Length: 565
Image (cartoon, rainbow, N blue to C red; front, side, top):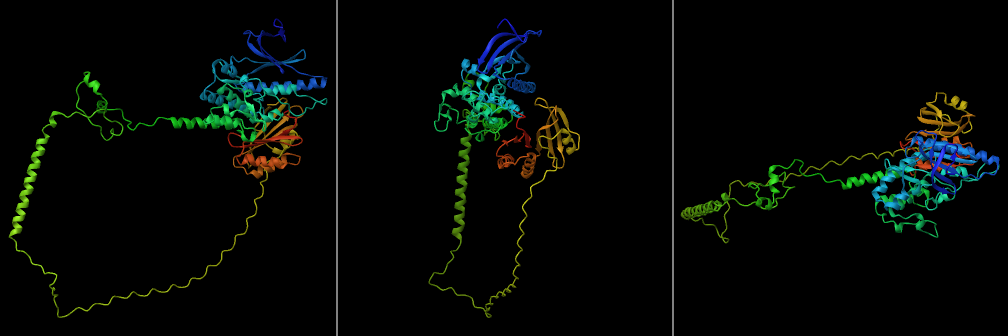
């Protein structure tokens, strides 16, 4: 097999991996002048009827188109070079990433530091968000599927589990398929993913245990399981729960999806906020003195040793009010000879001051001794009061005038009770409501304007039509139609910030031909109130979701149940 060419083009260099879903090889493209190295994945498919083979071919084409779109729009996802079927086998040819997986790095170099793990998460979370924005769940996040690229040290996400699911899900004879099978790696696979019902936060669960492995070197298989809940008991072997990074990782590992971060962007925002708070806490304090030190302040820091070793003699200086708070002299200034005669002057001043004071007291007593002594009556003698001819009669004190009694105020009339306000009526959509199953001609007739954009859709055999900022309610309308039948397979409405929840709920009720269960209206209210950023829902024949995007607008979408399967 080593000597033969696959598809007459690809020469195998070495085997990179083998598993239940297929084999992976490092190959050389012999039809290119550069003989470029690529990764060739041979996928194992079990088909027992022509109908099953046809359905697998359709799924394989669809998943290959998805991988091509992902790799073209994100440099941290390998590009798809080719896909083909050869002798009943399905092959994918992808870009080869030169580097080590995170598992190899830990095995060769040891555990990573919290700061290194945080940088990896900050680099990976935008990649996950871009995948989720296209309604794709990776399903197999683990250290083996993340390569640290040698050229720029960026993490690259490989080996999407969605392709495995598409080619291995059991198919009924009529071409339909049962509920999604469990794709992933035990331990890194979220509980709901194990039942075949993954959600976007299932990828965050795998990313959380990847971070635990990078920090501790222990994979989930090393942790015991709670026999009552089935949860992994990992906290006792994780010494980072008391730091913000460890707390964020712990949130991704919650058993129920509602307790995790709702989106990859939400976790990224939390990590960036932690980094900003850490930088603010460790920032150096501003210096008290902003001016550069002068010659005077430099002299203060001169030590005794530098003086002894021959530095020029300088007069000691003292810090001014501007420098006293920030600089303290290392030694007390030595007294100079000019200060030695001061005590003589002080003694002379003190002597003359005492002499003058004594002379003044003597002079005062001499004057007082010459004056006559004044006699004062004793307590037993009565002091006669002078008598006047016209004694002054005491004037009567004026009596205050009585205050006037306040006039009686009329009693206030009772205020009329306000009439109860009528309950607000739910807002009605001022835009056309196009259900799944309508035609593109129906869309044009109902909307009545030229679309903002009409292009090839992301999904295979589809066309995307967009009307931006439509009508007085400023909504954006989107439709995905089949490029063969021109039938609407998915209908979308994006509402501006501040839209009343009743308008979104009324729109959802009108877009689904079936009876809308109350769970859908509750999910819309949950996202509208900010309790969640994403909620998915389903009815018998339709699937949908309500999501808050990065700009705060609310996206509401419904599609045929078989459209994304």
